Every structure is written in structure tokens, then in C-alpha cells.
Length: 131
Image (cartoon, rainbow, N blue to C red; front, top):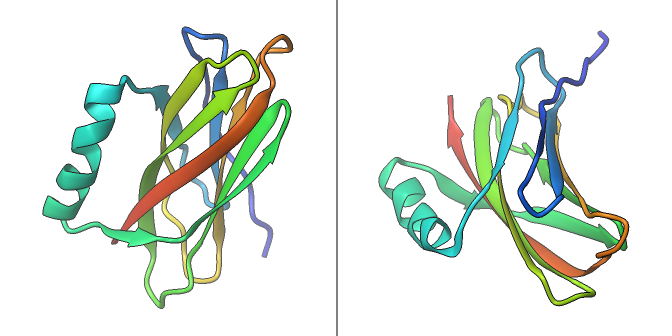
């Protein structure tokens, strides 16, 4: 069985671009968040029946990759956000919405930095809900 990757890439106001990938036939979206929106996300997810999952973050100077693995026996719908800092001190926050992930599949989100502001650090938070 072949898996196809689909993504929607959006340009953000601070010249960051975000891509969210999942190995399914559905598309994913990603948008930039301001700090006030970010504070309320965790509470909203928990109220809607989402549960926290491990989000692995890999940082290179010009890209942050977030990886979420579905080790549950049911398909999951995962959302989350990435926060980071660039070498110029500019804080970055981006939200991602992954396509449904079936058991044993991985979902990915990529955040790309502009050439003049490489990443120094980043971390991610992800929440999933069974379908």
C-alpha cells in the first residue's frame, strides 16, 4: 500500500512558513497564533476531549520539524503548536492541524525560517482526539 503526503503551506506575517503533513489522503493546515490565543488553546483542547501526546521536535537553523506518532489502536486527529526563538531574538508561534493519522502512522509539521533569522531553539505541544 502506498501512502501519499498532502500539505498546505501558508506564508506567515513574519516570513515564516508552516507545513503540516500526515500520511493520509486528507489535507492539513497551519496558521500563526498570537500569545493570547496560545494561552487558551490547552484549555479548549482538554474541554473538547483531546489528550496530550508526545511531540518530537527537531531543530535546524532554517527548519523546525515536529513529529507525532500514533501508537494507539484507533485513528487520531492531532493539533498543536510550535514555539521557538530565532537568532535575532524574534519569538515564533505557529499552530498546526494534522490530517487524520491511522494506527502506526506518523504526522509531521514543518516550520521554515527566513534566511536572515535562523532558529536557535523550538519546542512543540500536541493534542490528539480519537476519531
